[in-house]
Length: 212
Image (cartoon, rainbow, N blue to C red; front, top):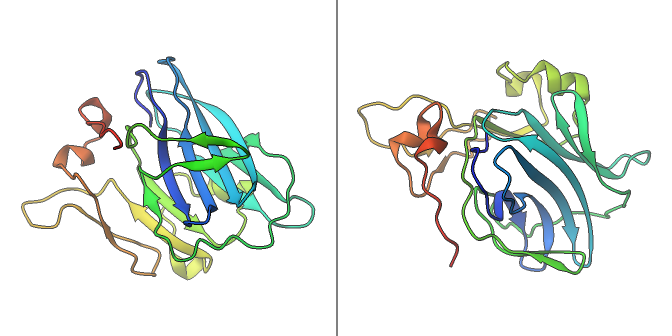
């Protein structure tokens, strides 16, 4: 969910190598308090494609972003549930090698799209419930089916990351740890963590951090 306030350039997630190869999702700066423009870009040097869509602010949206490498497609798409709300032009990438650079959620560094730079001014301000990654193209029916269902690696061998950000806090250490439920054990820690980040609507009190 994106809060119903004015928003600046910010990443939702980012995995791009130092040579400019990878993928990223990000929000454009806007003065609108009702809608936000989301983008999903695939980048390989001077080549890139971008799918863009508009989503409502102030409420949760289930968003799926993917690149379909099958010969009949070769496009990046954005789905809300089973409905496609954004797509790119066709382009065939030989490979997307991020050179082992980490996947960053809610932050990232400047990327070049065509000849234009996207520079974040803040970290992501909003709420993320689940964050899932698959090593395949998801059918619209499967996306719709698992919107409100748990998904398990035993039945989904292409599930490579499944982070749940809505787990309850407790009177114990390590509340800042986000557990990976994909079976890959890619657990991580949340930087700048506070317990309010696990509230139902943490964006009501969430701080933005300016990019230096």
